[in-house]
Length: 138
Ligand code: NI
Image 1 (cartoon, rainbow, N blue to C red):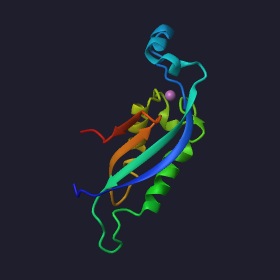
Image 2: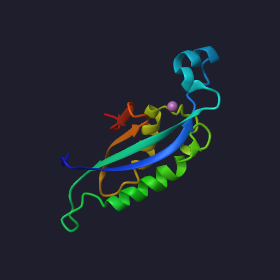
Image 3: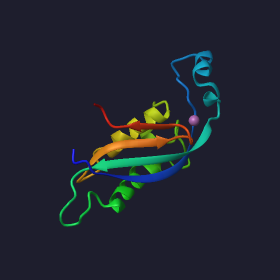
Image 4: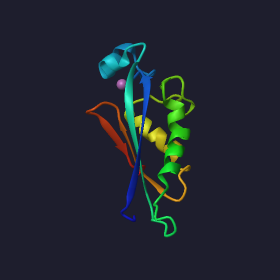
């Protein structure tokens, strides 16, 4: 690992409902409480994507932030912003849209799209106090 990291932040607003269709209504309400409310609820999510790699001699860049921004916006933000994550997003089909599952799904989408650098971590802030970070499979 080269020891140098760059992070691009993007924000999106989306709704979700935490519900496991394999469990009973009682079990879902016990597990998810108000996050299981029938019509869902919304968050202003903060997404941070960190990549690592070598600084290219010619550009002095690890990766052009503009390119990173474009990839994140095209592959993730355009598909999740102002959407209902349980029903509107193809790559989240059959995924319970917890922050933990969202970062893993985002990783699958972004991993192969980032050229010339390596995806290092994806952080998703769901509320002021709750953030999930994923660094890929160990
Ligand atoms: Ni929520």
